[in-house]
Length: 247
Image (cartoon, rainbow, N blue to C red; front, side, top):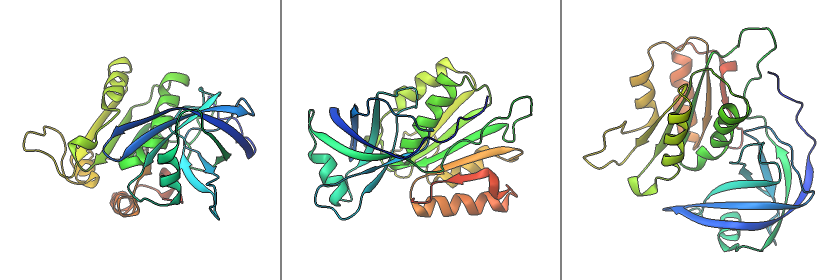
């Protein structure tokens, strides 16, 4: 199994077909492509959205897998109330948008034919809406590529009422024995049975040996710096620590 080359950057027109408040401050938007009608990208990449009246295009990770090539889905944390989040929050089904895609290098290290994997286990670490590109990657690995390596997700979020997609990940874990996930709440209720605190607390609890593990991080800057520091202390080579530069 090898990755195809990254497709060239294109300009797309798309129509909002679904816009849902998932939980708390997180909104999900499904864009059906109008022109071109199909998109090629690698799981983990993002799009550059044109915001009317804005001087710069806004970056949003694609949360849908590449197999869904007639549309793209994004997850938006609207709490910053910036130009981009306010524009996206205002969109309704039928509204049209323009964006450029695909962009980014936050992609899975490809497997080489007839060669042992460079990363024989994949660990994904996300906070908040950083789950967006990681969802795309996990769906692509499990449902499209049938990747049999151990795949683990550690997702940090603040409050229990901010949770979403946990049923989707639970269903994946039931259908794919090589996939496990853990949700870490930084402000959990007393009855919370899983990890609590920061994602680094969960990583220290679950991992004693890091071996040839590939780590894929997406979330706030402080989390990426803290996890990267922990992994380097554990002698994980820098080439096995992956994250998108705009986070």
